[in-house]
Image (tube, rainbow, N blue to C red; front, side):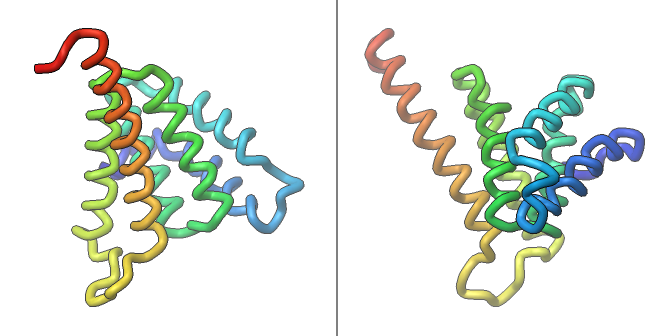
Length: 150
């Protein structure tokens, strides 16, 4: 859930604030620089608080400054965090993260009611879920080859 303790917010708020300039002032920050800043920040958070901090950052970014550049930043952070080591556990954690992220937009009614077409940020979350599904499918096929089918 994105409701992290106030003392954890400043380091992620700073990265969020810097990300708001990605599309208007590319001379100030790069996606790679902010991705690295995020990974350093997340490493300084207790392990049991990390996905909550990611949810906070993703929710804030998607809700208030979603654009082409910030979507690239979020995709890079997501894949680096969840796909760094391929394991079924990581794929499950990634799926759960995306499910809760998407659900919170719906629960809080940030997902516009009555729209026939999902907003771009919801499509982005669905796109990330497709990446997880494809990577997990490939991983499971590899494990079938290695260990035999059920």
